Length: 286
Image (tube, rainbow, N blue to C red; front, top):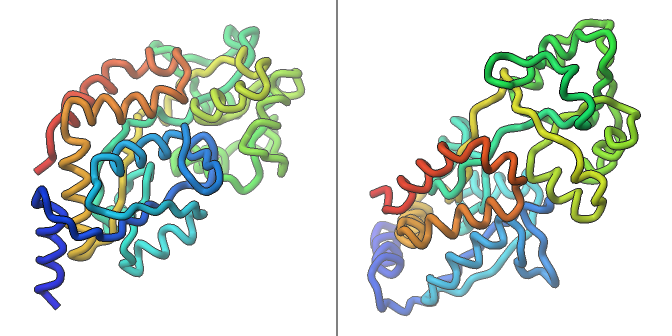
């Protein structure tokens, strides 16, 4: 059992080896993380990352599988020969996969009309205090029912006071319909990721006028990357990917893929952290 694993490792890491191994990329099924056309990647964040790496891995045959999170992580847990693109990294997933960091993702933001900005409870750093906002007797919020907004925010939402003016809705459409409710004044604020706002504004330009505000209780950018199963195949694949993206050109391509779907305000807000991430990403991890 050990010899095939070492043979694969050599085929993946030694230049010139033409093993024609199959590389399966597990792609998220939510735009703008991915935006497939005829089952092929295009201009989504994960699409651009997978296209960059596959173009520099000619000895492998690449295929793209667009799957929901449940299927994706079940395949990783089973140790199947596939890697997840644009996966958010956390302690639980680190137990299942070898990660190659590719992105520093701005955290969930508060989304409001410009006219609402002066009414928000902000701290000295210009961050919204979500706990105070949820207790505000005037400002009305809206979130999607049963959607997870991350552990810290989910806990605040669950513990909001009984008289909170936060409402829930089952209407999602990747957040676009909820954002339109804020645009038209039916709610004062919602919660979403910067890239979701940017994506929605492409189809609904009026959404682009909304503003994002960082949340004090959820202000740390998140690591995103490529996750491969924790076995010999996954280690070899992760090492090969790390070598491809671990260059100045590779690091720049990863940031370009991310920034193409983030608002200028968010890019500016987290510029120093993203720049430092890019500096570290410009060389292989090992």
